[in-house]
Image (tube, rainbow, N blue to C red; front, side, top):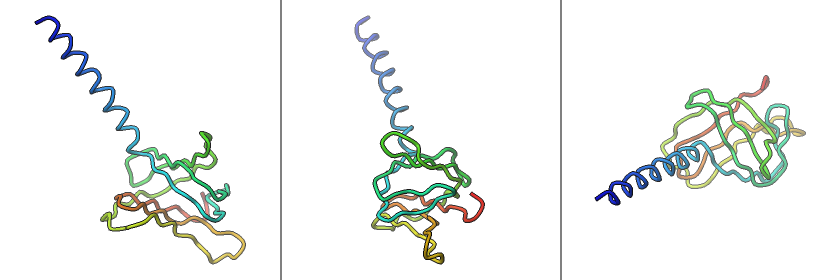
Length: 121
């Protein structure tokens, strides 16, 4: 009986710890950038990035990480979509032919979309 009680305590503790690990990943997404883009004062080169955001919205702070290092941070507006997007979508401001500013990121089959402020990041 004592063994079952200890087993139940260990199982409950393990479950709580694993829940915390899953909760942390809920504010993280992967994104692949195929062309150089400007976000704030930083330029993101083509490649695979991890995005992580702080806050629950609508105003959040987004960090772009590559190879474990934060390479850019920018404020964004977190919007909720209907999850009908079938592929990741990066929306760029192409009005300036020399610099393509990242305006928005929509994630496939997810409800999150990030809209980045232009001028003044």
